[in-house]
Length: 340
Image (cartoon, rainbow, N blue to C red):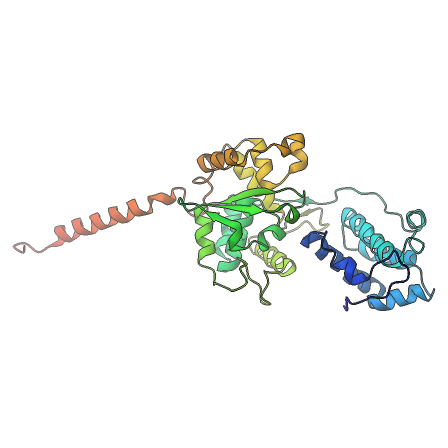
């Protein structure tokens, strides 16, 4: 896809490139815009440049292009996803071709959005099932799974973290900083990683990009391949989507896993919602969060309980000392008589 479409047909329009790379939009928003353009090309079986040229020469209209796209989307996407893509598509044509060529009232009549409803339930693995997935994962994806299921971050939030976003404390756990433009709810928040998870991250290969999860091209791991790898791990652990896809397992399932585990450890509901990033459920309280208090409560109630491979991670040194004592005692018992 060539993004360098720079032809302006009216003074109050912008180029496709400028619309795609709008700096006021979050990185996730820009990614979604690029995805819509790519899918629009697939649905209409022509490049985006050809689509624009066809519209300008009156061979097709914005409405027929989007109508074909929506019909294509409904075959494989949920009603809500289709609704979101519909909004992005018309906004693109408004910005690049002008409102005269993309009238909202005409668009609503010729390209109706249809009913919007939740058609899928994201199933959550049990601790035992997640542990199975961790054991069969490579170090990189083991760390991805652990980060998602401890922190409650969305996959895009987790993959885009850099080492500079982590504040590793003396106790070994880390506070993760998320800037407002990087979160879905557009507010600055923090989440936390246990010492066990931080240790998983420390053994990953070092890189020059600064990203914790570096991809093959120098940036961070891509969303699509990471989601596909997680999906494969679910399947290998026996967690299969319903045949009609009414119940599915995704990376988003681990947000539910994390919030449930935080509550199980005794963390208050408001703090759980704040850490995972459900600001809409917090209401007005979301603007008055004491993150020092949240960190303190998380440290007391969760930092040593949210452990995958040992219920008591600090017992390692004690067990090692006990093993040394037993070895010394066994050596003394087995020493031949008369030897000193």
